[in-house]
Length: 214
Image 1: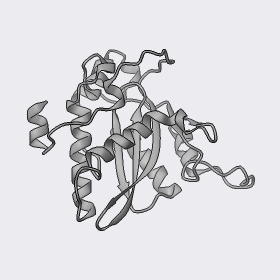
Image 2: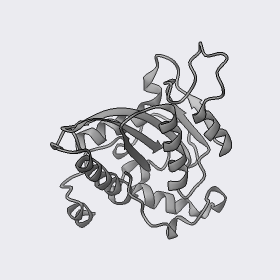
Image 3: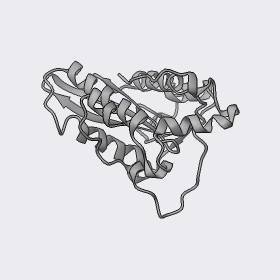
């Protein structure tokens, strides 16, 4: 792990929610339950929207940076997330933002594009309770971790510099960070261990080349 971090120019990975074992008992789910959220980050070149998805069980993270955060961008992010992981996604949890669902007043609106992508792929789309942001706390903690490792620690002249740093950090987290909640496994090693249940997979995780996030 140390050599992996050195190779990607990362001295230390900040603590994450997955590093600390939980004492409270929560309902367990098979891999494929993703929490999704959007945050804002900034380089000297200007602001970007950070899309973050984290698997509730494996802690595997998938991120992208975009200039805008509209519903079409959110739907595209979900499609690329589905392609990026070797297993089936069965549930996504988001807030009630217009990127993910129609407003309550939009009673005559067409089915939201994000929901349509979920339906096309057999994914249940769950929404957090209004004014209860902590119900999606896992991904919000990951947002903070990413910011602490990138924009709060280094200065970025351009968006491309930030994208490269973000990709390095997420690769180090997914493939080199051993988490206590995963009994010392990295998120991707935990996914590979689930290969004993092939019905959950679209392809063997052992044959998949690690993909960096953009």
